[in-house]
Image (cartoon, helix red, strand yellow):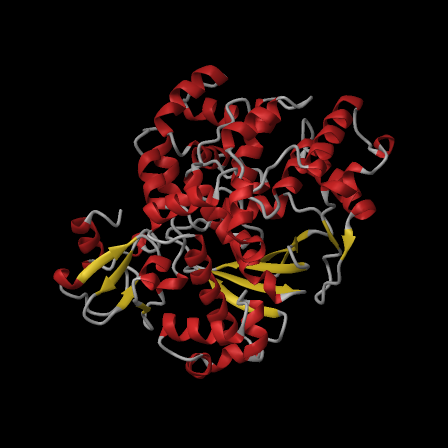
Amino acid sequence: MHTDTERCVRAVQSKDARFDGWFFTAVLTTRIYCRPSCPVVPPKPANMTFYPSAAACQQAGFRACKRCRPDTSPGSPQWNQRADLVARAMRLVADGVVDREGVPGLASRLGYSTRQIERQLLAELGAGPLALARAQRAQTARLLIETTPLPMAEIAFAAGFSSIRTFNDTVREVFALSPTELRTRAPRSAARNTAGTLTLRLPFRAPLNPDNLFGHLAATAVPGVEEWRDGAYRRTLRLPYGHGIVALTPNPDHIACRLTLGDLRDLTVAISRCRRLLDLDADPVAIDDQLRTDPVLAPLVDKAPGRRVPRTVDEAEFAVRAVLGQQVSTAAARTHAARLVSAHGEAVDDPEGGLTHLFPAPGALAALDPETLAMPRTRRATFTTLVAQLADGSLNLGVESDWTETRARLLALPGFGPWTVDVIAMRALGDPDAFLPTDLGIRKAAQESGLPSTPAALTARAAAWRPWRAYAVQYLWATDSHPINFLPV
């Protein structure tokens, strides 16, 4: 979008927050870059230039605006709706892979050379993987500076910098302030956070309907791993350097996020996974406008716009739970999962009580005795085959996975039909066009709404909803009185 100058100028002049994260405005006279919705008086069009990423702005010598904080805007929705190389690379960068494994590790995960990765990212985003990771480190550093009392040296290494000098230079270059000056400018209330615990706000593009999003997560919560308490969804997180516990509370203009981390180096990854869990980088206006073109869906969208797809913080965990949920009720699936957690999950200490374990890793599940599984023999075979392939790496469900290839691999597993594959594609892989025409809830909603109820006819009708069929599923599911569709009280 950043190449359409006229459209970008109109968005800036109207301060349209829908375009935050789509592009960034750099002001030639002040050498500052902003988000489109920046509250200051817009500069003259002749003094504006536009970039596709904050990293590109920083590479061109612009510093972040102190008013609108463009580095904290929602991420571009492109990376969650596309499955090409650039989108997969951006999801990995957000997950901290460059900081942990370097550019060679990023390239290895994607199956391309480092030169190809750098060339494609530079062509589309105006910055290579190192610059993108550097911009992310700067954002993490500012968050830690402003919300914790940690010494600057600890913040530097927690944010992913290799040295304190690099940390100081980057913060000054990006924010035109030293780390100490950033902390001085921060609200005094932020200092109440303690080391290891952070309270922050996760932005999103309005509107956001929390009912089905948090309702689904709460209704399917696995005891010990997840819970709904005091208006917040809480769960444990398995992270690269340790474990964490997150509490997510819906608010009208943001999601309140309280993170307790065993290792602060996991902060960037934890935030990325929470945003992905709640589908916060979606573009609800574009999605709802497309779905409204169908006269049957239009009233459903108008009644409660901004529905998101509830996703996951752990793709392997969700795949296992999808198998446990085959042909059983939500309550039965929770019971099966809770037994696995109690027997094979890793114990964690929750300062607030209630959460006791991490969901078992594929390696732990692959080592269990299949005869101990209280499920039919055919589903037991499905379960053991899945966890064995997840454990040895022959099946990869990570953010870098190719959706088409992964679907084919899943379909080849015993006991995996279209419903199981599509629900994994929708909630674990993040495919916004995944569709469930054989789902009983969808067929019931279709019949009651006047849509074709047979899978083939419904799929044909749903072609007009592409590429947002996963969101159409949420609107159709919401016609039922099942607890997944209601915000818990």
